[in-house]
Length: 525
Ligand code: HEM
Image (cartoon, rainbow, N blue to C red; front, side, top):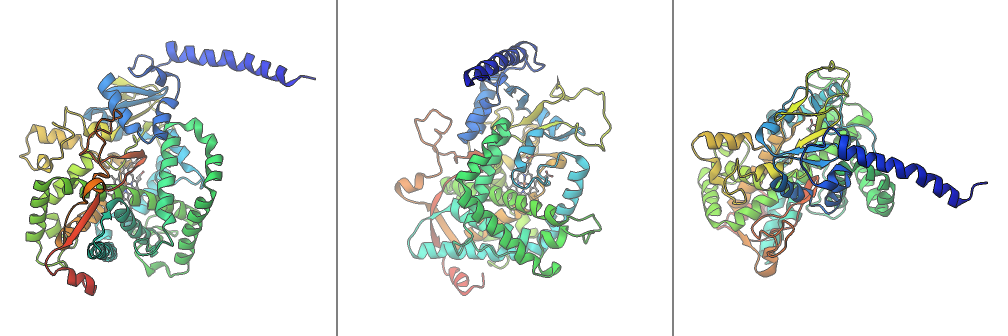
């Protein structure tokens, strides 16, 4: 009988040469060997995986572009680009789909959602069904529900100001965005703004997004997921229990009782005559929806408050636009007047540029998964490079949005850059601006994100003046001078890469304007 030592010896004899073979192959014969990049990235996904665990992969990617140029090999089979040509070649290409590592985001449900379906036909059916809920027309129907939640947000700010307390805008915006998306997905009042009962939902969203981020960057490490789940089992079971409660609540209501995912996208046929989502498909879609719509808008709103509070000139111009465009709080609603606020739109776009809420690189690959796409012998070319089959390609939105070639003084927050005459420089800038990605896998919720953020910012500036909290509290959210890890810029809102970003602050102090606050107290905002 073999002893344990003999087993170990046999394994070593097999694994040793195999590892050596893989290393030599990756160094000398791998089809991506001529692309520049750090040495470790040739051998292991761990090169990106470790900073993903540290929530700073977007900063490492930015640094690597400065070191190695516009295309960097970030993992044995992954190339990240930093040009506008690559952006368009990748995301508007007729033969790309999401890369295989997105399957690692299936996690517990094992049912692909619109986010991680690789097959085109499957994705198209989901996108058509879900997309109906996110059109501008649908947003007009949903608008009043959204505004009721924003009123609660404003009343909470009023309360904080009356009690001379500061407000941490990450927490406030996160709860607001969660409550809004809860209504849109499940027609369910999560009430995280006013009660702690469902606070597990935003916390669960953050945790899930982080796990997805790490597993996307380092797919092989997914084997630790059962251990991660075991350690977080209490929170995870609370999170799923809260989701289950929402589902059961909604199923107990008539289908047309709310304007939500269930009403608009489920059933054999949707109201638009599309094939609808069925049973469990619907709920894997809805769970993803809560994360996609909740975490991203949270980042956008918090970052707007960060930048506006630190730029008095921007603050003055924005406040003046809102306070002269509208005649009352009731008139601040979705429509032509809100759309006429060009400076507000420039502030939001500049925020999306400097602090893109999706910090992860949205990876794509040549589509070999869709039965509906005939195979092709055409080379797959990105930015002039022939890309071998099986390679994941992508653009880091954080890097591209800080690329000097397109955005002069890239770390300066200057909304005015979006308002200049349409010259070549501005056209180039617009082509390089892609916070929602591009193409048929780009964001489905763009109209909702602009509406929700515009309403929240405009209404806040109608009722309040605000400034950063005094002392150390006011520094939360910015960088720390002297650090050498890419987080040294005091005036840059610090994003922690968890696929969608995590962050803290800003801490702001609010002062009600004149007597407008009475309307808030009366509940007739
Ligand atoms: C500022 C806010 C937002 C930003 C910056 C943003 C950004 C993005 C990006 C970059 C993607 C592509 C991700 C990838 O390829 O992996 C995406 C996809 C998606 N987003 Fe958003 N998003 C925002 C808000 C929303 C909202 C409010 C919703 C809906 C409630 C939403 C729903 C979706 C969906 C369903 C997809 C998947 C689309 C598909 O694969 O067909 N997003 N988003």
